[in-house]
Amino acid sequence: MINKKLYYNGTDIDVRLGDKILYKVWYFVNKPATVVYVPAQSKSDWLDIGDDQWAIKIDDEDDGYLVMGYFPDIGEIMPKKITFVSRGEVSKEIKKMEEKWRTIDEKSNK
Image 1 (tube, helix red, strand yellow):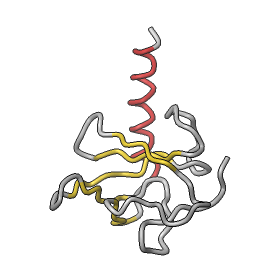
Image 2 (image 1 turned 45 degrees about the vertical axis):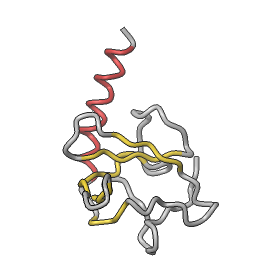
Image 3 (image 1 turned 135 degrees about the horizontal axis):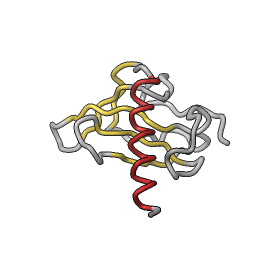
Image 4 (image 1 turned 60 degrees about the vertical axis):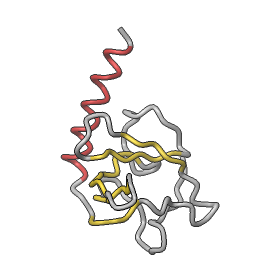
C-alpha cells in the first residue's frame, strides 16, 4: 500500500478522501466532484482498482466515476483540470458511493 501523499497541482494541499473539487470537462465548464478513493486512506476495497490509482465521482452524474494514476514518487503529475475546493465530509459521501458500487458488483456477478 502506498503511504506517500499526492498534492493538488501547484499547491501544498494533499488529496484526501471526501475532498470537494472542480473537474474541468470543457474549456470553461467545471463540474463539482468528490474524491471517493485514495490508496492508504480508503478503508474498503469497494472499488476494484489498484494501489497506484485514485478515483473521483462527478457529483451530478450517476456513473461519473474517473480513475486516475496515483504516483506521488514521480512528482507533479496531478491533472491541471482538477482544482481543490474544500474538505468534505467523508462518511456520508463515501458510504453512498460504496453502496452503489456494491449493488453494481452484485448485479454484474449474477
